[in-house]
Length: 453
Image (cartoon, rainbow, N blue to C red):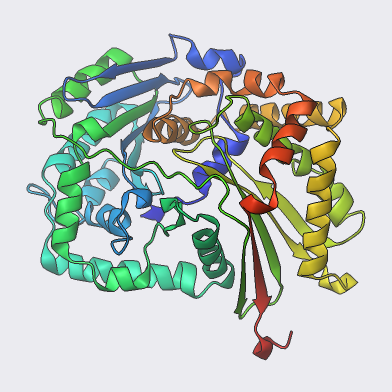
């Protein structure tokens, strides 16, 4: 099991796993098909017959942003418990069955969704759907199994967060950058919430969110769509529909005010994060803004010729590394995050790097990027689409993540054309509008005094 915090975001930034014939072919009727069962469960099937393999995924529209304060980590612990037995399967038996048929399986929890997947020979697709149907309706949460598994999650938190300075700092930084949004909550949960979690809380969470109307089945591979829909009806169609609470959108206060956090941990190098609260496709006032923000991220940090790499890393040598993170696809408001490591070997500090970042933002806010810069970003995005198209998992992940966030997989059809429509003036406009002090959070990770730094 894994926590999918950044992986799919990175994929959404760089790839859309489009077919060789170009972006528009994503919506070609012979490749992607969808249907909805009477109980509300949606099925999206994407044909890819290059190998006799299938990826089958069941996504639930629930993640850490759905959790009330004081109950963080519920979605992730429930993901673990989904492998610990059902009415008809003993703990661990699900995984053993998949392995017996030569398959691979795992799960992931993120801020907005929880997903379960199997990779199998295409002829074994029915097995995957049968198993997922069983745990959608017959999960058994045993007290003793819960007691063991919550300790596993605590240890996972220690290894992945508490004992890793970069991760521990980033968790605290996000909690500061998201003032009102539930994106501030860690997917793995705060340790004190894990300490107080009880089995009945998971049973309630399962009954509340794990219903067919709140689920999505994504199948990608060498399959016949009609057969997939028939199998989906067979295994999921008779599961009763249940009402699901309306989730609160993770929205931010428009101008939350400037914030700053400084954390001292046992690390060798300082690190700087600067994040701005910005809109996503789901929350933008103007539909072109998220795509302009994506182009802005590319101008600053998209390859060897981007401004940060050419001017801050190789040019002034202010930074050892510098980058930008932004995805236009999100259920709520997003962050436009600039980060870097100062070149302490050249006498640089976080303060010098912060000043360099602000100079870059101020410059692009008033001076639109050149046509050559815009074309470079578009070319690199398209290259990423082509490069990653061979992965069945990537195709399924994109469909599932978008649909689970309340968006449509058809956004992928328009992704490149929308980027192509962005003008240099619009790039400067979103920088001037959103990369401002009242939307900014600055975080510094600094070595502790006993680190000799």
